[in-house]
Image (cartoon, rainbow, N blue to C red):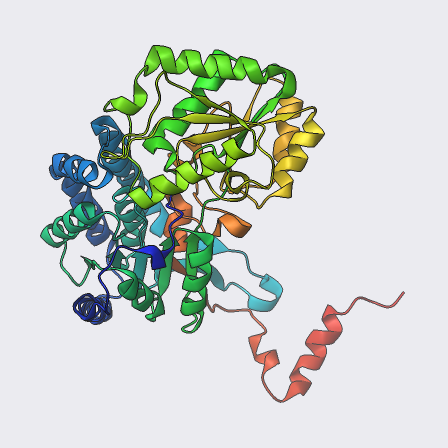
Amino acid sequence: MKSNIDMSEGVVASGRDETAITALHTAFSAARRGFEANRSPTLPERRARIEALIHMMLKWRERISAALSTDFGSHPVASSDLIEVLGVVGRAKYVLEHLEEWCQPVTRETDQAVLGNAVAFIRYQPKGVIGNIVPWNFPFDLSIGPLIDMLAAGNRVIIKPSEYTPACSALLRDMVSATFDSTLVSVVVGGQDLARDFSSLPWDHLLYTGSAAIGRQVMAAAARNLTPVTLELGGKCPAVLTPGAVSARHVESVIGTKLIKNGQMCISVDYCLVPRREVQNFVDLAQAFMASSVPQYSRGSECTGIISHKHLDRLQDLLDEASARGCRIVPLEENAHVDRESRRMPLFLVLDPPPDLRMMREEIFGPILPILPYDDIDQAVSIINAGERPLGLYVFGDNHPVLERILGETTSGGAAINACAIQGALPSLPFGGVGMSGMGRHHGIEGFREFSNPRGVVIRGTGDIIDAFYPPQSKAAGVVQAALPSTP
């Protein structure tokens, strides 16, 4: 769930923001000292931190909704509650249920002939101080959500929210400072200068959610300090309706998912593959769903505003290019028009766009859904594999061999059958990309381990032959001879 926005596109004043950069370095030094003072928080300490986080999200719930509405121009309250508040709380509760188990050492086998009765295990220890660069589209879910995993693993955390969401960023800073000691968790607010400095610090781990272009820059900056990174980069997530699968329920799933955040979600459906003979049926069912569920979608409170006029203009440019190339564009509501004041934009279908259009080369990140007709499954799979590996892949139908074939012949960060995006909402499933859609995982036990150091430990026992490795090497001769296979 990320924005595709380049960190260099931030809305910042000219000149270097020295105040924000000083605040960052002060926070980083304080977090380092805090970690050195308590390098291995106890299980009760970790649990208390996550419980405080839950209380924080519930306490500030109404102000979270208000801040989202301020930044987006329009933002559904229910969406704020479900995703940005309750989704985070659910994730935290899941971690609390399993944290004791995750913190236990994991036993590994040993070779008794060499090590006797020695014991080997993995002990997951905190990495240290972790940075989190957060996008604008889910300002709380993508800041506080990963924070859960980071605190569960025993780390200290500094969060850098997006300058595109100033109200949310200021609120996040207030929430965190009122809940946590500043050496444990802090929020630094600023623009592109701060983002560049943020990436260059010697973090023990760095999480970035955003565009692939800036992901490269973040990774390059982190490489100077050999900082490990988790990159959540999104991509063009396809939905495939297999032959016979164009039903009211499945079309509702595709369109309904596209309406979440008005398409500004990295695991939203970016384009839809539909059997050629069923394209018009898809259009009819999509129009029927909108007419019955949200007949004046872009005029009402269900519609999230596009984050800025710059982003709105980009989306309009995508439509204008498609129109100029002769594509059939279908608005999914009557008298559809863009409200520039609230930045609310209707949802449009674009039928059979050429592959060289910008909307087919770039992640759309808005209420535009290209519909690509296909003639057989081979062609559908080829279309998917011609692009970069997406963050999510969605397949619809009831022919199990066909569904499995599509999953088996494609690669994506996550996937869902007969649903869209739900894999990103389950706290038990790892969330992340592959290739251009990212690297690393958070959520669940994978998130705990992503932000932990898996330290391998051996406790020497008795009955081993370890001293055969020490000089003089003549001691090893008998061991080597015994280990070699006998000559036939």
